[in-house]
Image (cartoon, rainbow, N blue to C red; front, top):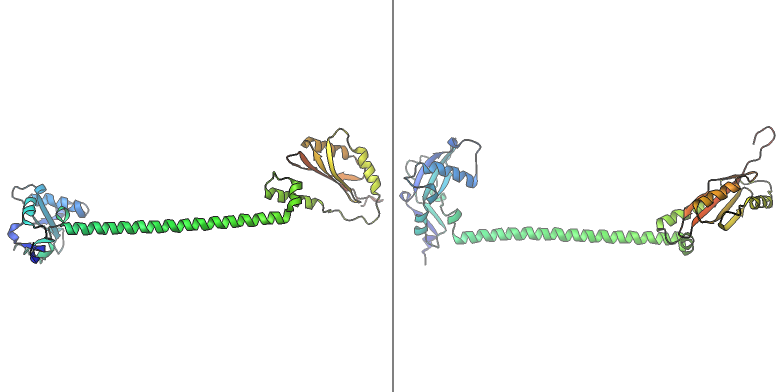
Length: 300
């Protein structure tokens, strides 16, 4: 069992190699860490008594004052392996040589660093690294869980919006309207089609004040009705100021042929046919409006 003092060993200064190094001769920007120790090692090797720097373990302490001056303290790796007991935590010189004019804390020159760090210190460092990694993993897991919750909340909101939208479609269109338009269209298109159908039922023509004979208009319409156009008429509405024809034809060209045939109807102006493709054919709407009467003098 090592004595309590063995955990912090102190060797005499003469058991170490010493040198004061001028780091300014290295040139370039200041370096840190392992690269700095490597470059200072080249300078330290020049004062070692025929010993390669690869066999020496050294530490470098920057001296106070101006310039890049370092105090080098080292010993051979074999000496460290033989002279350090397993329970030693730190190893430093008991003093510094007399040629070192600066006030340097000899106890701060701990050589049990890097590859010679004690096992308890290495275990502690590994434990610290593991704790840090566990913290990173925990933070990542927390962020992931938070994102998943956010995504789930957004999906629920999107589902709620879609359900509310569907309720609006069902409320506005109703089963009868949906069946009349056809279920092959998406709800938004069915809603637009229903809106157009409702707009077509509104007449922008001012109501006729005098009584008009709708029978004559219907008779003229039927007289011009083409027999060679295949059409399935759903409704023909004859009003004093407007005639509305709704039905279904096979092709778009049939809708134009019907409109061309009804265009000569005396006293009426035919509008552009409105058609929409469906699964069963082409839904057609043709609207004719009565022309304003022309009084004597040419004024309406």
